[in-house]
Amino acid sequence: MANTKIRKPDTAVNDELMKKLTEIGVLYSHKRSKAHPNMRPFIGANRHEIDILDARAVIDSINKSSHFLEKVLGKKEGGLVLFVGTSPAARDLVENLSRKLNQPHVVNRWLGGTLTNFDVIKDRIKYYQEMKKKQKEGEFEKYTKKEQLDLANEIEKLTYKFDGLVNLDRLPDAVFLVDIEAENTALRESQKLDIPVVAIIDSNDNPDEVNYPIIANDHNRSSIQWVVETLKDNLIKNKNG
Image (cartoon, rainbow, N blue to C red; front, side, top):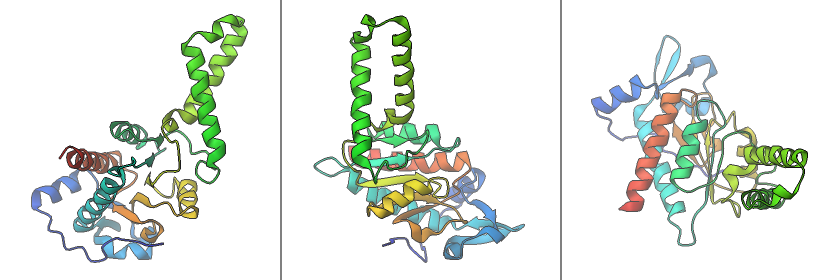
């Protein structure tokens, strides 16, 4: 897989930013024994057997990922990025980011075949939208109370699965993942279809698995929040600018 990360980051990080990244947990990673060998260039120190990520790598990687996503979303025909984060720490952050950018998301459970069997998924999304429309227009009122309850339950289940995908009318131009270990199926489907992947990568992950790794703690909520908010600020600023 083509990988665009910077092996030897040279971005300067001022003391104020370094302090912030440290305080909110962006730099604190896993025990050294869990580190992936390919992550060594991105580890700046080790304290009490805990790896400390290199702040320069964090800034370099998020800037490069922001630039890539900006290019995708800025396509004349309308770029599509599928945002995925199903862990409790990431769920609402990823959903808020995707909605802010008017992009699809998966925050509950990844459905196997979402990408590799997209035609089937697309039909289910269409069915979900039709059911929602019928419900809104009162078409279910002609049914018995039990039938209406059954239909309402079906829509609730469909909403859980497909509500975040209603504007995914084709395969995405890129996929954003929080934690490639947790979202391994989504990663593999993206790789199989050669869809570029942007992902938050921690010290226990292999950065060569994704095209645009963002070096940061991927299980700490405040770290994920910082990454998401930084991406949002960069993308919206560039879009408006």
